[in-house]
Length: 382
Image (cartoon, rainbow, N blue to C red; front, side, top):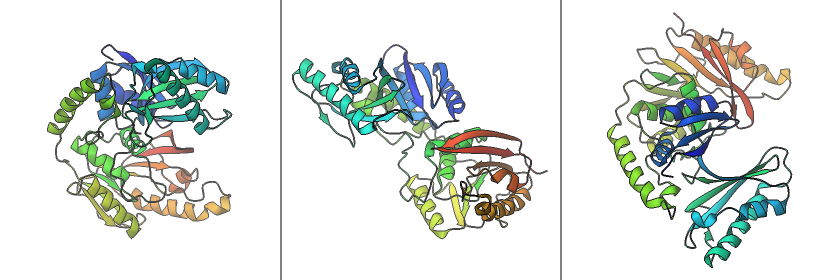
């Protein structure tokens, strides 16, 4: 990877433009948005900087092949044609993560098995022995995707999904993925230079991502990446990452403005505090019990309110929505009474906007897994 090579960063649907902007700022070139990700080019230094610093990408992939494969035999033959001996040795460990495009017949476990069999058979033929599978922490993680009669095979630079930041020690029901929370903050214009409040903070994901932005902390700072163990590239990658991590650590700072969170549930408050502690943000993020539909203590200087209200009975009849509409109305009354605060609200309930009863400044669609949501921004009240 000394020269610039084509790479692919995956992300939540609806965040592709945000990821493209982030990648460009990290030095990537020739960016092209795709459904669920961004294709780009980077040399080794730039690719590792992206992997260390991206807040929005779920994976950074090094594509190896994109081959026709319409049957199980085709999948095996396509996977066996890849020169795996250039990327693994007999002492390497590996795992295969497989996905299928919606509507594709078969299942991901079978696809992973066919790719694994092809890789093992090729290396046994080329090298005289086979590497072992390690599904938990492999040296080389292979990502296989089958769709529209094509098999895409890639190596995952990090080796783990990048939303697993390591601080979610106490989850609550239906938490946001860390990468989606970071995309929400970027879409809302949060840069760490203004106060931020989440009045329904749940397990604290938005607060923690905001805290790391404010402190200029690299999301991948504390974790080894699989690329550091790749047999033909690992030592070089480790040297580069050591320098990148040291530089990132030197450039961290104290958050310049308050970051506060509230939740009505004491269980959520306790979970959020544990997660904040795991993220080493105890001195940065304050969390208290509070009801978002009632007046809350706020920082002296206004900034931005960012929150993800409960979706409730979003798929039921209009009658089933009555309680949620009342809640959204009360929320609109409480938050709308605050002077000088921008509101950035991520909602997965189509009844939210009308019940909140304020005119939005802008809206955009983003997906929380399979749920189509809206990110709605409201201007500050004078």
